[in-house]
Structures are given as structure tokens and as C-alpha cells.
Image 1 (cartoon, rainbow, N blue to C red):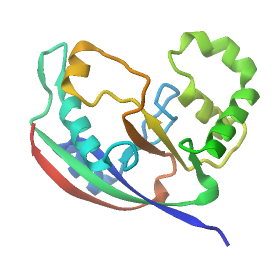
Image 2 (image 1 turned 60 degrees about the vertical axis):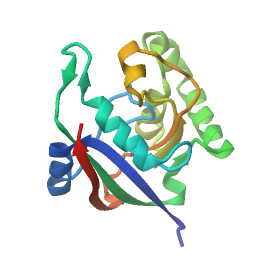
Image 3 (image 1 turned 90 degrees about the vertical axis):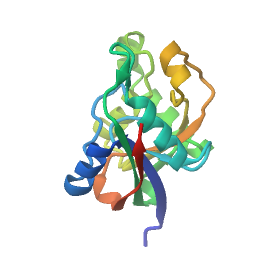
Length: 187
């Protein structure tokens, strides 16, 4: 019998997008340039508080530095419950999870030699490679990351390597069992 892990995550976006997600479901972020591969990105408790990180993300994501204004007036934070088989969760906050990641890196070493220098970070590519090429059943990836969550970091373009939050990327949306808007407000 499979063991399951329940994860409570928070997604910050515009209020309009939050309403659309409740009625139509999440759209996956696609491509190899995302933090930990394709999926629906949720902030979770770990490093930082998931709900607060999602709110900060929604508020600061509204800002368009080129236009020097917010692109939406209201934010929304969705609380989602994810239920995933333990064997289908790649937890990069643990040694075992990092060992699996390093295994995938070794398996795609030749491809990384070709594309590695063209990408700023290879993490998303590696996890997607594990899913596509190695046929690994990775429904959810959990990781500690640095994400620009403050207006000053966004305005100045400051980047860091020390993680400031914990995220999950949910590639299999059938593992998302419940969504509700728990917070909204004016930017």
C-alpha cells in the first residue's frame, strides 16, 4: 500500500487569475527554465511562511519595471491541498532528494554539456529530463529556493543564492485536491 504525503501550498497571483483558477483549474508553467521544472508553483511552509510568500509574490509580480506601474490592481492568494504518493515526491530539501537529482544529472551529462552553458540554471531542465527521458514518476518537486519577493530586489535586479522560501512544483494536477481563495486585497 502506498504512503501519501499531504502538502498545503499557496499560489499568489492577480485576483482575476485566482478566480479563473477556481473555475477552470491551474495552468502548468511549461519549459526548462523554471526553478524545478514544469508544474504549478506553490509556496509552502519551510523557509519562510508559504501564505506570506505567496502574497508577497502576487504583489511584487504585479509591478512592471519597464512601465513603472502595476499591471493589476488586486491580488489573490489561493490555498491548495496536494496529496501525492511519497514515491512520486522529489524532495530536494533532503539528502535523498538531492541524491536523486544528482543521479539525473549524471544520466543527462552529455546533453548538459551541449546546452549547459546556454542556460543560467539547469535545475528545471534536469528535472524535466528525468520525467521525459528517464520516465521517472515525479508528480511534485519540493525545494528551497531564492525568489525575488521584495520590491527592492525586483527594482534593483538583486539576485542571491541563499534560499528565502520553500516551493513545490506540481506537475500532476490531479494531486491537487482542494483550492480556495484565502486572501485578497488591493496592491
